[in-house]
Image 1 (cartoon, protein in one colour):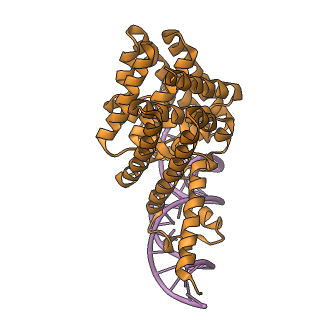
Image 2 (cartoon, chains in turn cyan, yellow, brown, green; image 1 turned 180 degrees about the horizontal axis):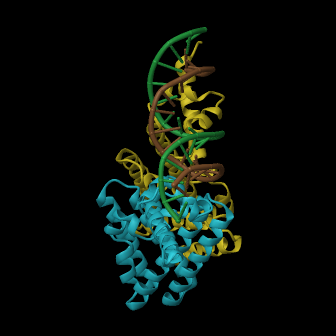
Image 3 (cartoon, rainbow over the protein chains, first blue to last red; image 1 turned 90 degrees about the vertical axis):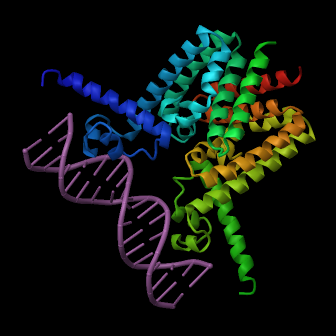
Length: 183
Length: 183
DNA sequence: GTCTATACATTGATAGAC
DNA sequence: GTCTATCAATGTATAGAC
């Protein structure tokens, strides 16, 4: 082939993207190697020519997913205001499509049970997100509070059955966050 | 035996307690039947004389764990004030001992991927907790916001490596919640 | 009610042919 | 680099002896 190194890098990148979506939807532990490789048309054995282990894949997922969330938050919260960000993050469509959404409500609990390398990577990405939101809001404490609230809110709402209860929770958090900002 | 039905009920209750602790620490999916039964000195095959399936166990775990959290929150938040509850919930020891702590930061994400019966049970328990906190705070929206914030806060902090960053997050949320209450 | 044994699927990971 | 085949371990669940 003419560009073997490019093709391998592209396959690896595609694997990290697909694995991120699978992990956000069904969890990282339950994302099997065979199923992941099938999403790029390969078999399970080929996984280990791209990653040393599943744990290395987890580190790459965390790095990429939190970088993506950082870019989104940076864009959404700076182009207009906090309300814009909240409307997107606390929306019913974000609840329904975890594989397209922010990694924080989907992967945080599993990272909390992973080893230190994963927590280190996670912490780096999260601190960056916090800095971005702090710059927008002008308040470090409020930035941590808003991040915690929206992540908890989406996680809790996804574990409910009734859409009306979900919306009550999401809207309460939305209005509460806006109320505290206007003071 | 003289009290066979009592012994069976006690064993079942003990299994639900132990399974709840295991699930909060390592996750429900990774809590194997053999390992669970070993905690009460039995073998794996005996599990199915107490539960129809692992899913029935999950429902029992959710019911019991959220009832326990309800009692704790009810007691802590009413006997003094919001500060008392926040000091306990957002404490480093709560981070370090998930098996003894609230089920919400540990099990919510997994329930979000479970079937409707689990989400129904979860929603019932969570709504009760919300009602209790609403009665204490006098504000429905604030109650949802505080629950979401503390659950997100503990989840995120557990996924970090550096204790100083953990404490910065926990303390920021604590102070922010207290500030909003004094207005 | 609990035991051992077993069935059956799936997991992460490795070896060697191509 | 990818394939097939395979490994050892683990998962849920069932069957039948005691």
